[in-house]
Every structure is written in structure tokens, then in C-alpha cells.
Image (tube, rainbow, N blue to C red; front, side, top):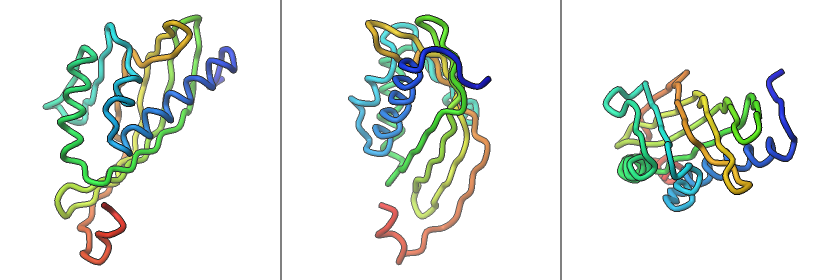
Length: 150
């Protein structure tokens, strides 16, 4: 079964996923940082070997803030595919759909996160996220379409 554990926890984790996605789309570093556990956080992006795995919330947030300077008009959506709650630990798979521009190239990425979460003080946080890119589509943006993508 792809979902197990208390419904209240599953809803709270879904809200964490949605908060994260909203923060990416609005480039809200404070909201995005608030999704991560203060201790022992790690973020892996194997598709980008130059990034690899970043360990520590401060380093994760600093890397994200710098990276977001490159992504113009990013729209990021995420939804859960599975959740397993085990007390104050949880494991989740979340699918993503993202569109952004770098220069004149539009990227449409789809993939998923494999997540480990921790519940602290009654609230869920990401402890570990690993992103797997499943599909990428690129094309050159036409000048007349630019007003809709930025």
C-alpha cells in the first residue's frame, strides 16, 4: 500500500510538499528553508554531479539561493505518490513537474523526490531529499511567448 500511517500526519506532510513547491515558484528562501530540519539535513541531486549531495541546512539553503538566480520564472509543482509514517519518521515519494528558463532555453523537467522526514515539536521537516530526473524537454522560447514565461 503506498500510504500508511495516521491521516493527520499524511495531510501535514502533503502540506509540507505544497509549501516547498510554493516557495520554489515564488523564490521565497525563508519559506523554503523552513521546510528543512535544522540538524542532519541532506539534499542529493545526482543528475547534477557538480552538486552531488549537500549536507547541512545552512549549506543547502545557500546553494539553493545561489541556484535560484539562474532559474527565470520557475514554476514548480509537486504531489505525493506514497507515504509511510513510522512514529516521528516518515518516508515519501513525491513527483515533480517544473518549467523554467535559462537564457532563451525553456526547460520542462519531470521527476521525483525520495524523502526522509522527521517530526519535531509536532511539525514535519525534510531530513533527506534525493531528486531523480525522469524526463527533460527543452526548446527555444519565441520572443512573442516571453511575456507568458517570465
